[in-house]
Image (cartoon, rainbow, N blue to C red):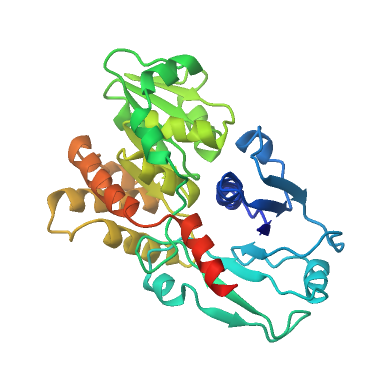
Length: 355
């Protein structure tokens, strides 16, 4: 089928990251995808080689000169240009129209997944688009997981990859990745990590700026040495997560990839001014972990809450749980999630039903 996927980049690269993973997964399955994006610049390093079946187009307010797509996806309610909607209205056949929503573990994701949204205004008045919610249960659209991902993860050799990148581990070093938004807890975290031999891998972004400011040009403290990484592709970002004993991640795309990596992780959810992100965070933890009476679950929940509080005071109470039971908790959930159909497979099936 012909797909038009629209992406409006807000900030922090999460939107383009999710859209590229979906577009490239569709292309790998034989679909033809036009990814229309208002800021394609990040794709130069996220996906430097492109992907078969995917053509990137810059957002335009002029009508396209091509046949209408079979499927139109507006990612995260981004509203395609008016000229494009007028172009669709002039077509004899209506495409399947999908609003791909943000990932959530909250109950509304199950209730709203797949619901129709009749259009009351605009050039497509009378048309119907459908909500498609990624999620963690069988009553949602699932998670992005390209075929063979977990098999590639199982075959991955971290020391060979780290050595090939020029970042070999020293004997006894644990590997920790830090990919977060700005967080006042980072200096205190560095102090804690510096008590043990640690290779701290820090991708580009606000966390790297903070680590540079905290450690200075040497990028060392105690038993910790940090590497300020260059921009890397999505494929290499997966390899980075697979290399780590502990991953600090942020937003939507890196959370899902940390889950599939199967190592202990800490998630910094995108902060909202009204504090709604704390409710979203707790819904995620409830979907994953047993109740607080479980000792391992209680320590993980406390860590996630303190990290997302993002204050210098909270880090004084921050204690990392033992990695082995933590990893077992992640891998047990990964196994349950892997038993569900992935998002792209569910999307293809949903569209086949609606068409």
